Image (cartoon, rainbow, N blue to C red):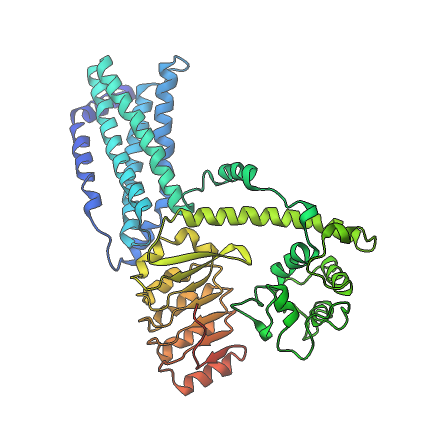
Length: 495
């Protein structure tokens, strides 16, 4: 038997049993009625995470089948029906594989929300449509009528439409709802909103000095966090100074002003600011600060007046170019972060705020009065995980399972989880957080053994264990192993 007759025989077998594809489509419509499992096995988790890998195969095959039909119909190139049949067969197989792995991922409970369900149902409908398309293709191969061809072509075209929709929902689930269009819309908004402040309206203090203090100093010296009692967010607080023995600002004397003394010291000096690990002021910024203080530290001095001084004009000219670029960058960052927040809708059980000192960072906190917020609610925030720098789950329903998701917030710097039911088993998930410095475990059921997990969090500096049952021996052991880590037995700040 030659290969052509063998192929014809197999084709006839598919045509004979083509109704099985309709049965398959009907069965698949029942798949979304199965709810996610509470504790999926490791194998299910592994298989579910293969979904993003295999999901690209049906995209190529289904698009290619339609493309071949179009160029054949347009008499550009005659593609044999056997080739299209093979593409459709591989397409339905890859759809089934992708749907199966997608179901496993859904079953793990790692994702939830409207976007997930739209993507999930889209995958089901796509696979059902592909089963219908293959059935109609085989029917056309049997009947060879114009009518049966157009039924088949309409099903194939519809499958491609559903494919685009489902793919978009999958991208939104992974990258956020505006991943595809955020830069197009941003440029459009920029044309309307982005207007650099006219130089005639700019002040030396408000637009220059504040700009670099904001970027390099205010994250540690603001109303919520004032190291050394020093707040730099307003001119009045700058003049008031902190708890140090030296005055922070003395107009007309930079040498006697502690703010200038600190930033101009050698970087290895214990009093040098900002501290190690944070970017110091540039040479231009130090010189601008010195000139402003030595010339009266006037908060109302206009930039145009200062620019007339040949001593400072070159510095201002260079710095203003850098400043405009920085303002533009921060504008873009804030716009992108706002878009991500808006994509989450209007939540009622948590609040999100952009950090005023870093437009890329977001703080997450519970609403007041508190409403139900548990581990599964964290899943809906995954698109914002890279931006969350502060998170407060005070009084929430978070359990140790929630640490799995919290451990994925790569930029997390402060975590407040007091008054929850955790016992600390999940703290091991936080060991990969390289920026986490503050952890509040007050009024929780944290156990002695589980508290030891904090030793694996590299940058941790302060831990609050107010009203917990941690023993004196464990506290001493931790302090002996991590001399850089402070354990507070008193109440920490609320965030």
